[in-house]
Length: 166
Length: 397
Image (cartoon, rainbow over all chains, first blue to last red):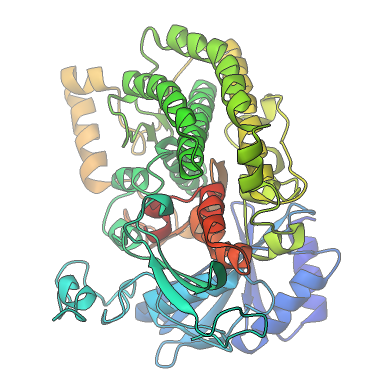
């Protein structure tokens, strides 16, 4: 299915949820309102013509400096229809919070944990929202632009991992 | 602590730690297993021990400087990582790659697939007690690594693919050495198969173990051989051909039952197909440039840099200032040996990626591990981890 048909189909079903769309290098991006993300995700997956059964990727992007928001970006693919779409949702940086899509695609579980770990975006309704890549005592969210690229954590890694022994 | 199910045979569950230092977890994977006797009630993977902040580092490097970072993701398949990254930047720039470079990339990526699968087969078989296969696989892998060394001068972290093409043309003797290898390799594959495919011990350890249905596999985002073992016909080389893959004839091997054995069969057959692709590529390899000549994006030829002032200045400027792609965002994925390897780059028009997100296949494939092992026996964990073919370098990034 080509990009225009996808946009029209989604917009016709959710006129108020899609605030914009863009095509760059033949890749379609839909900008979705935060409140509608679960509904849209379910629609994209369950609609027989769209059939976005595969969540390729989910990640955060820091736009705090320019727009005061974090973006949550979803890359969807349809294995049987062979088309892709990207969803972008803005969440306010003072309280980054969005509904989970783990109920739609199970694979979102770890991706959302990663976005939580890296950006501090909270996914409401996530079954097991824990950090995933950084150690338990790690402070801050490393992929935020205000997190320095070099420097030290308050506790050394040895103290974090061996704290039971001390 | 998990509630003790009614079928439990003991009065208390035992929690054990498998990894992060364990030969069968293929790196620094830590599994927290709750056991009822030898039966697994719950498996919780803990990852991140190899987290180096590659995505963060990339934001502070120019586009060219990110290439060495990609080598260190899936370090047994560096060419695939280089390629996925280069394709993404090329898409962002909207540039064309010369045909010769595309075919060189195919040859090297398919050799990489073979070498990655050989490492998988070697360690997977070793985990399940078949030691001979290990030595055989490493013998062939050594030849491939010699070929890589001829091409790029390195054995593991190759950084050979550049934005716009490849770093150097193929060296003399490359074609001959590769031809010899692919002529010999199918017989070697048959040799491995005589040791395993109909081996009763191998089958007892793998058939019906770690089963995942096609629907679940898609739902959990599995890709690559782990998905095709469940019978889902999706290979990015076929679905969204890149780097001239549409010019090659090959079949996509599929499994049926989604168990460890089917994933084994799929990978073995994939090596045959890769061998055939390399064979075709050597025959149709066209003459021409090995890298696109685009000022301000690709580096000038090395010999010019050493002899001409203008080229040296150009070289210097590209290295120091970097390339500046237009504002925008792209996502590109390729069929890496382990599955869908995707790069998502957000560009703000500067010489550094504003955001670089890597979609590593192993990260997503590992997520399905608890689903495959819960309710099974402890030794099956080893078989299932092996069959998922994970590399912690790209899981933790």
